[in-house]
Structure formats: structure tokens, C-alpha cells
Image 1 (cartoon, rainbow, N blue to C red):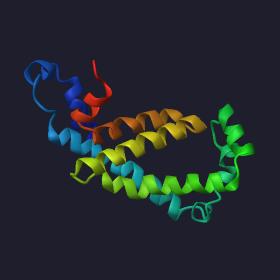
Image 2: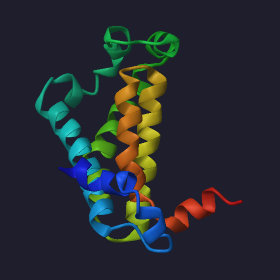
Image 3: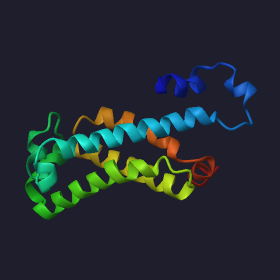
Image 4: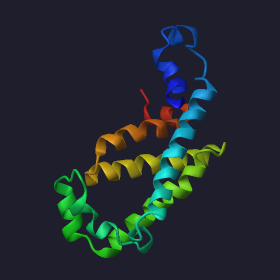
Length: 158
């Protein structure tokens, strides 16, 4: 359902002509924020509810060698990084997936952008570490709705 509402802006052939100087529909933006909230909170809660190693901050000590699709960087992360690095990664994981997801729904611009930056950064870290990165690329898309036109204008100047 969320995808149907958000994709309307893409598949509507009259969107660019009719709404050239208008904001995108609020429903579309908010449903994408709701989607990223659900994705992140669900991922965070399943980790806390699941294996004890996520609560003990030890999962990343062996994650890189047991993940389904490792890449060359995974080897170096597993062999050369100390336990403190892995524990900090798990804490950042919990922060992004359990705390930042609520910030995406707050109507204050600073909090939404803070959450969006952390979502995108977190997904890029997961892509670099090599685990099922096609899902991480897809997860970035609804996270981009945490940013507004002012944010994108500052990044993509002509």
C-alpha cells in the first residue's frame, strides 16, 4: 500500500506538467517516512528480541565471516578490527534502528534530517561490509524522503 501511494508521483504521466511548481503530495512523503520507520524499527526489535549476542554486543565479532554474501572488506573487518570496534558498531546499529526511526516521524526538520543522514550512512556502512547490499540500496530510497527541497538544493547546486 505504501509503495502504491509513493509510486504515484513516478508513474503519473501528468505529474510533471500539472504539478511542475507544486510540492509533492504530503501523503506520498509521509508514507515513505512511515515505511522507513517500520523497516528500521522492525529490524532493531528483531535483533533485541532474537539472539543474545545483539544484547551482549558480540554479534559482529563473528558476523563478517558468517554472512551470506561477504566481500573483500568483510575479511579485513573480521580479522583486523578489535572487539571495541565491533561493539561500537552494534551500539550504532541500535541507535539508528531503534532511536532514529522515531525521529523520522517528528515534524521538525532538524530531527528528520538527522535521522535521514543516519539512515543513509548506516546503509552505506552495511553495503561496504557486504551483506545483502541490494536490500540496503532499496532501503535508502524511503530514507531520502526524510530530506526536503532545501536540503537537496544545498547538495545539488548548479
